[in-house]
Amino acid sequence: MSSYTKDILVIDDDIVTRKIITKHLEKNGFDIIQTDKASEALKLLHLNNVDLVLCDIEMEDMDGYEFCNLVRAEEKYKALPFIFVSSRDTMEDKNKALNMGADDYITKPVDVDSLLLKVKSLLKRVEIYKQFSLRQKLEFNIENEKYKVLILDDDPLLQTMIASTLERSGMEPIKAGNATDAMNKVRTLKPDLILSDLMMPDVSGFEFRKMLLDDVYLKEIPFIFLTSIDEESAILEGYDMDIKDFISKAQNPKLIAIKVKNILDTISKERKKSIMELQQVASSVAIEVVPDKAKQIKGYSINQLNIPYKGMPGGDFLDYIQIDENRMVIIVGDVMGKQWGAWFFTFSFIGYLRSAIRVAINSIHNITAGGIMTNVNSAIFKDAKVSEIFSTVTCIIVDNLTNSIQYTGAGDLSVLLYRDKTGEVEQFESSGLLLGVSEDGEYDNIEIKMDKNDELIIFTDGVIDSRNPEGKSFGMNNTIEILKEKTDDNYKFELLKRKFVEYTLNNYDDDVTLVGIKRN
Image 1 (tube, rainbow, N blue to C red):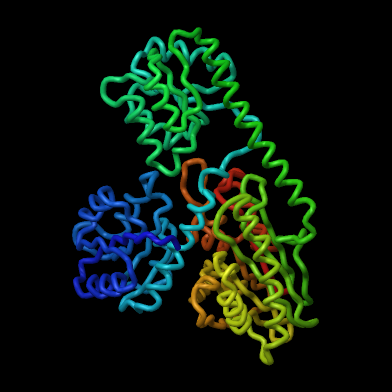
Image 2 (image 1 turned 180 degrees about the horizontal axis):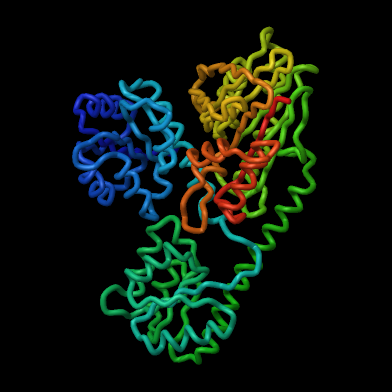
């Protein structure tokens, strides 16, 4: 974690809980902003650089769910770490919280040690995202798509002329008449380049550029000033703002379009070259982070699906490790991040994890999923380099002698069991923390009895986070309801896979991994 102080916003109308949380967080070096009203919290969020939110659910003026919705509705807060703190302890409440976009859920009375561990681990994950710019810098598609160019100018005639010329040149123009409108369109439409007038009555081009530079997600968008000014001081000030070029308004719109397209083509070629070099590296690596097909064990049928984010190697990993002829370990995990940055972490992490699991299997007399995870966590915690890689992990042991499955998890999602006799779905949740966060991980060992035709479903958050064209997430509740449907499918895995593809139209927000384990 970086050395600067982290600001945490605490919202709770219970003064005792609020004071306890505040006292212990301040004792651990955090700066606290606190309030008892969600409506006031929204104002505080806008006025401060908040790094994490701890929010109660039941409050008088506005409940925590409504507040979370308001926070996630703003683009700049979509990735803000958000933890619910509530006296409610049902699986339904936890699912609702996570479906709304919360990162974690803590029940009252608050266990201070658990709170601190979850806060620190979540903030470390965010630090990794920032350090490697995984959220935006790597989120582009190398397929040929129309370049989107935002044109900001208060002269509608000139704006229309340039837009028409860009469109005839095969680009997609986005018009904005003022800085506020432009900023909204930049956030929602993500243009490939911004072409901005310099002299405007309300907010100048310089001021608009500063607004973009202050936003970590928007500052990397290529920027060109469109101006009639040729003063050297103005030009130097512009280049100090990391712009790509100055283009004179007096130039023919066709020439402006050519310059814009040349700049975008150059950027695109550099990106494609980097991607091709990385792909060559990936193809030459012998180790796989996801096997081509599921490994089988007698008495069970195992199916798997893995779809990397936008077709690029990503952060999900999957492995099968045979203990003996009757038992097999299945590991499903997700290293934080997307695309290549996550893949590099995953590549280094999966080899280490495989070795640690095999060592644990050989050193444990009574092998359990919880025991394996405890040993692996201890090894990772003691390794300074590997402990900086944050990953959620689901560990399963399939045993065909006892017809049972042992399950434990490290910061993972719940696993779901479809009961064939009743048509119901059971949800199992592990309490384990992310690997390497604490030396004493205390990973539980949950035993799941499997009757004939029962099917266990495991998945990473790419499944429930992926959205339909209307922007609604697939969600945990929807996943459960689909598994309950009566169909002719032999495997619930196949039903869920089909419904997922139909819902998302093959457009995913993250790496997707889905595993089905059915007892024959």
